[in-house]
Image (cartoon, rainbow, N blue to C red; front, top):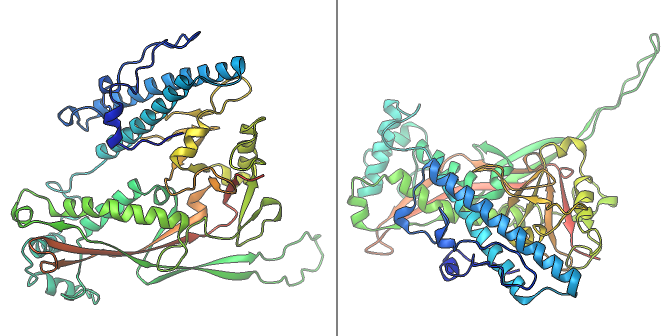
Length: 454
């Protein structure tokens, strides 16, 4: 399976979907080129909009692509059964369709995200009080021209002791809200995990190791004193994450540019990429602790403080006989209370392999999203795509399953700080933007892992 980037899709434009009945014994219908599909990645920029109609067209294109993918994969399976191996042309077509399906999914996700973006200018919600608007105006003056005379007394009045000309100023509430909202949409683990906002450097969460004793008694039996529950504590320190977008003098002088939205757009990708990697594989040193970094033990020996794992029985892949059974076993390693809101987490390459799995009746187990903005499903459980998950390899934990809302916690320290630097990279103005975030497993029984090992 090969992964194709968005920039590489242009080279596939003329051949990615040229699936014709040119194989012996094949009856595959021709599929139009990718450039002719509405909302395709190869469509000109002038044809792209973020209206609901464009999302609907892209969603239809996604289903057309998936139907073509299923037809070619069925042909591949038939060739293996008849001749012992698949034709090289069939494999090439399947790889092209798989890459195009991934690109169409990414575009559909982007369009769905854009349709949900609120307007930051014009109509303000509850943040229309004079004090909030005054802070917003003072902050914009600081960003555009470096004038801090209006901003300093406002933050002094608000007791923002951490804000000063050397350490930077806190961004307005609207900007912070927009940054956090975008991160929740772009960062896959943040979108599905539990979250807390704290005003201190560390969030501490007590939990019960052993509950209080209880027992049955008769009407007149004595009630002896029971042992008190034993409590332990989970600690989630908030680490500093930074980004440094640059702007030209022309951009800053343009009054039509919404600086709140510009800053949020510039830092969202940098923050989301760093967060996504840390929430999965972070070692806890100056970053959050990822759920794959905690101790892992076989599910039969599971104990609190580690994540339970289930082996596929095949090194680096699914077993040849009944491969989907291992996914069913993974689902039922989770207690029923966690399965109600559980989901699969895997990267795109692993999802590409899972797409080919069928049940005993020949039905594909992986199903496309039921609507724009929805997730693909596997055994009716949503699938979250996290590129920082490992690929299918020997002893790799490439698939996670669980209730991440209860299993993993993201801790955000309130406030996003910004420092204007017009000196370090002249003629550009740098905006050193920082936020503090932590994370870690909060319920070790809520997440299970599938290990591709013998």
